[in-house]
Image (cartoon, rainbow, N blue to C red; front, side, top):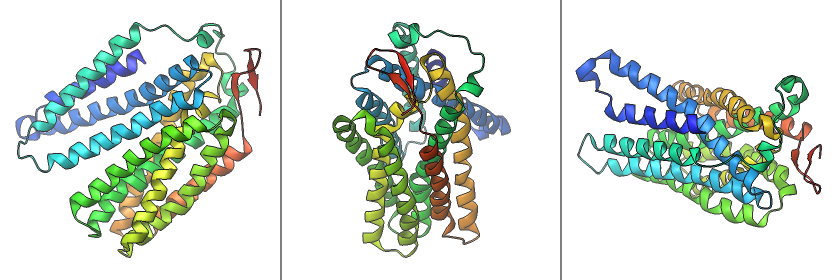
Length: 333
């Protein structure tokens, strides 16, 4: 996490200070690309290791500990998209640099804070060699990949891409579409906390599978109603997406925690998540190309089909590592 926070802070500060195209030409484009890649690499390690750290330190509130991180991520998406929308009202062209600089300094401050914290007791007592990890824990890796792919493609298509799709289809005004996507993220963050608080840890697989079933229904409905300009249908579907994301936030990090033993958990989850989430992000250009070709039904169907596959994988390979009554590592459900 120290490395991830430092990399995120330095990359974000780099973007804030990067000269524009008028000053350095193509070097600005390549510089921005490399810095964004660094941010993506840092994000996979930063948020996952933070969540694993909290879950390991709070064995009696595992769902809530993980949900706080995931809800924080959803709330961060709300803040980011809300700021982007608000910037449309501000005429200062360089104000975004100030925001990036502030975020960069916050990331470096987080790096400083993490260096002062100790590893969890569970991690310290399970320092074992890495030999045979892929062969021994392949079911856990399959689950991590399925979950990451599901979360990535659902958020990218049903939130990020949907906003631009709704604007292009002139569903509402540009600002109204942007605010709708932002408020959906806020609603999911607010719903996730009570769900995680009242749910039991043994229900974590049920929560994730319920979110997948909702996504399978919600994604095609969201794009269908947007295409038909049916406001009531869109609002119902976007509410379904918010509930889907809330269930994801409530269950995500405890479920990832269960897939690997402590000595492999942070590195294993971060690595597999980065790969699978990157593959899920490929759905974004596919959806964009589909709309260019006027295949408007494809984005929603793409989500439904891929999430169905993830649902099948998660149902077939339930796997668990965690605390038992005598505080030893156990596996199986």
